[in-house]
Length: 268
Ligand code: CDP
Image (tube, rainbow, N blue to C red):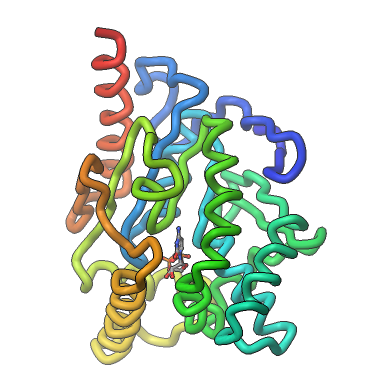
């Protein structure tokens, strides 16, 4: 069984939990307990699903930094704050960071649960209104400063798979394994449709619906890539992994392989 832990108090790594296809029989090595796997990439590239499986296989915690930005955006919407008010957004990020707990929940729908002030906000993080404003909130340097510091502190404890946009470039530039995970816009739109459908937020899968989702993803990627502070960028030493046409198992296996290869080079 996996132990529950949180990032605000004592941070215990979940006990080694192996599930799915990558199991202990396949994992022919003992992952170093304090390594960091940084997984960056554009919207709907499959980071969270892949990261959850990689974390399960390695016995690491999954930290989805997008959830932290989403929680600030959600907090702003719930309080009726203007997301354009930079000072208010920074204060909110500070207040939320000190009251938030990130609970590993690798078996759950998201792979984690995020509590703010003891309230579980996980199920609300992907509301369309949150997705709409989150890039603007995440572009505010004060908000990034607060959240990136919190994420870097988690990274220093190690034993994590951390997903985001700037993990390999800014948050954990010395991560042992860095992956930039992407997929074609069409495939990402199909995956995002699948997520939305599973949450009961999408009707029939029509070409128009997929095109609309693809357009929304492109707009978000453009916002994330063109901001001044920590834009979405592949770190020079990150491995580019295009998951178009690959199964989830294949993507997970490739990342596990990168960990294995890195361990071999460390030993030499
Ligand atoms: O899951 P999805 O790919 O839709 O995005 P996410 O990982 O939940 O991130 C939501 C938004 O948070 C992104 O579009 C970015 O604007 C922001 N973000 C960021 O700026 N830096 C990160 N490390 C993670 C997310």
